[in-house]
Length: 322
Image 1: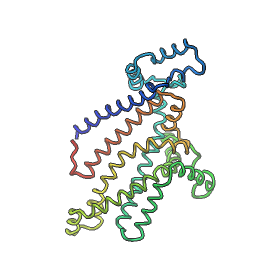
Image 2: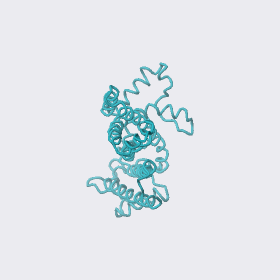
Image 3: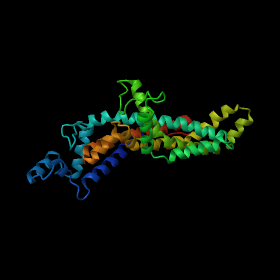
Image 4: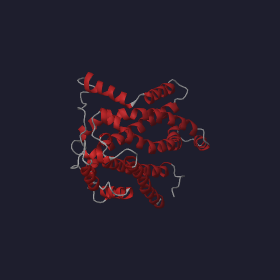
């Protein structure tokens, strides 16, 4: 197990290096793109452009520029924005991260729990009316775009029905930090969580249903039933536990999708997260901010994938990590 963790941590550095290099080269080595012009403003003089390039190290070789940027992110933590030179990137990213992480991981909890219940119910009641109804609902959820669901949710909870007993508890759009007010943090994220999780619920429910139906025909399941094990024990310990492996695999990949796709949800619900920060930075051609967001998102995704890989051994002891 220790060897596996060390290998995955080494892969963390390798993946982070590749991603940051790719992002850096897209901004600095694409023909016709010069961040100096963005920093200097309109109609700068040649002397001003030269001074800016020297100030930001843009007149140095690309490998040196990349190393300097990584040093300012991880070591000195004094990397500043191109569009706002008084703003440091690392504190800005750290300040925006809780909103995105709260949104993505809260939505993940909802879609995993609800999809397990839906998939399990559909498999248990296969052949009855419950199964097709649940799968139709799952397909409808997959088909609804996040931005449309979010706008509809805002229309209902913030406007039309806000004063009713159903949604009077929904706070105005925005984000309240957990340390400031846990109750308001939860209330403000419930609707965004549901919005982001709907498509994933449908997908996971359908995958889990198929996996459950496949696993229940395995020899060890028939053996457990032949030995007289109660049905709820068979479902919980033999069928569901093994059927969850594909879901765990998908979760490791989709949490990254949720972190990256949270920009739509953040925009609709006015959440000041990493998606909004990256969108503004790309619009302003602010490479340091984009690089900072990419580094943080890469670390979060790979660490979560490491946790997911460790869950394999917990769910199925037959799997040995090495």
